[in-house]
Amino acid sequence: MKHFLIRNKTTHMKLKYNKRNVIVTAFMGLFSTISSQAAVESDLLVGYTRAASANRGGNDQIVAQIRQGIIRMNNANRNSRTDVTVVERSIAEFSIEENGRDLIDMLTEWRNRRGGTSEGVSQRDLEERLGVDLSCIVSVGGGVRGVAFLNNPYSAVIVSQARLHTLGHEVGHNYNAVHDQGSELVASSSNSLSGNRYTFMASGGRSNGSIVDHYSNPDVSYQGAVTGTRDRNNARRLFDQRNVRANFRSRPANPRPPAPRPPAAPTPPTNPGGGIVPGDDFQELQFRHSNRCVDNQGSTRRRTSYIQWRCRSHVNGSFRFERRGGGFWRIRSQRSNLCIDMTGTSRNRGEIVQWPCNNHRNQQWRIVQRGGSTSPWFWLQARVGRRCMNQSGVSLANLGPIEQFACRDLDWQWLRFR
Image (cartoon, rainbow, N blue to C red; front, side):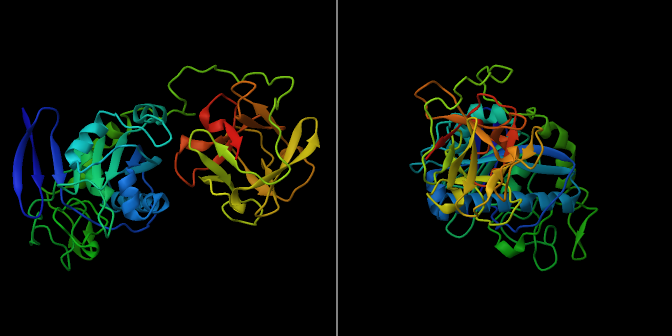
């Protein structure tokens, strides 16, 4: 029977647990936006509860703060020479009831992969099809501020009224990093940097400005102060685990749902559009997998690429279909008065952008009905190359990029008018 240690500002207590070693922490921080580069990538799924979203002011706000946390964590990896990068694969709301439950209970449910997104995609299926190596749930929680399994993909963090708990600390535990000793409650010479600053793996209720973007490393300094010692070297722990974490699951080249699918694109029917005919007015295009809509980012500039964004009956995501003959359509943005264009390439992963409307084939798309004669779902298939509009990365969040890819019966290629 193994143990885990719970620490908070006022109490220390040891409990039994019969699975893995778990560390619960009381480290808090606010994230800054600093870009990073690293060599060995691990893929991250972050889920959040409806209560956590409400605490931060809505889905857009909590997603933005989670992304800031990922950026700051990668900045710490770069500064500390861990050779680690954490890559966002999906950020999504999950239908997990909190009802006053403590964070350890939440983490146990998350680790057992019992959750599902608010759109009905199961956590298990999403992790498998995205090749997720790290998985975190963000909640309002209770009892403690963060919990993570050592040397294991799963962690949980909570939000507060003022800030989002930093991901870098808990994900550090997933890489087998431990607390920098002596820092649980008060500053001390053994862990304090210049001006009472602390590394990511310090614990205790640290203020926003006291946490620097570093994991402890005796070979790296911050403002003239060495960030670690021979015995306090979490950068080494992350470095040693980088390949283990990155290879927890294989990243699919073109993620697919777990159900078997035909390996080749079906031959389009003789009447490709079936019963689907676009209206004369502007309409939104909604993806099946995410329930989000094609969006031009509010830009009026040519070459702007398309993303997915929450559907909101806004001009950024509204399009008019104009007949071009032969069953093809030109698609005009209400926001920019420019047309959806495939940039002249017919290769997989080819970029889809907006461009001044013309009669070239690069701007001609066919509606190919999927799912039966009464289904509202369809592909948008390009005339050049016969590839389909595809949401890259199978993201459930805003800002997910859009590209062209070989047509398959996958939820992230199925669209409908809205």
